[in-house]
Image (cartoon, rainbow, N blue to C red):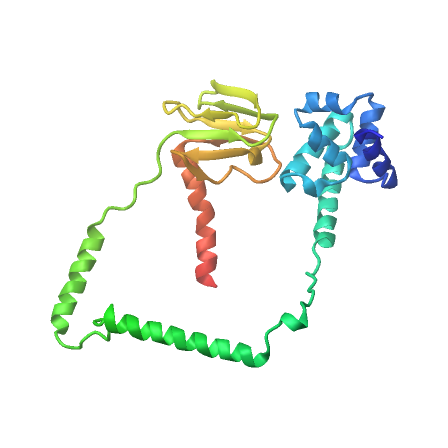
Length: 276
């Protein structure tokens, strides 16, 4: 029995699952897996994973949602309904896939007795105490409480240290080329400047990258898969434009704009942590 026959038999057992619905729609449209992969730019192994109902086996939740949406669009199913069902099935997997770890007792004959365990603990404490005393006596004899004499001299040293610290320059902001790299196949993206002139437009394959021209005036981006685009500035990774499956447009992609987005995300986290 072939791999496709096996997965069709599995799907008959759960006809209302997302994978079964997509498979039936594909067959009704007269398409095979290879044709769907060519049209959607989604690898065949991921399509089979979806049809087999193993959504949790995809690289990430956003991949499951995005791939299923694209698949549904191709075979004429309601995209919103499919996406909602995908999220429900992923939630079911989260609830059912985590169970308490089982504990298997070992061989009682190999478990040390309580007396031996206490002796080992006592020996460890003595060993640590001896190491600490040896270190203080031979390697750090002067590491005791600071003398209370000469407070003026100590204050002067503290003031000098504070002055030097205030004179240190702040760390420069990250700079360098802004690079977008696709983490999946079939990532459509368009970059353009403030006048609407196209800088780059393509269906990026996994691993493809684009460097924003440093002399571009007000460069912006338009894509439906922001979660699939990794971003670096001068080689340093920065957060993606979005982790959700959504269309973004007219988003500035200069180094300054991307770093400002990073600072805006970090500010609420800092406030919440200080408030708690």
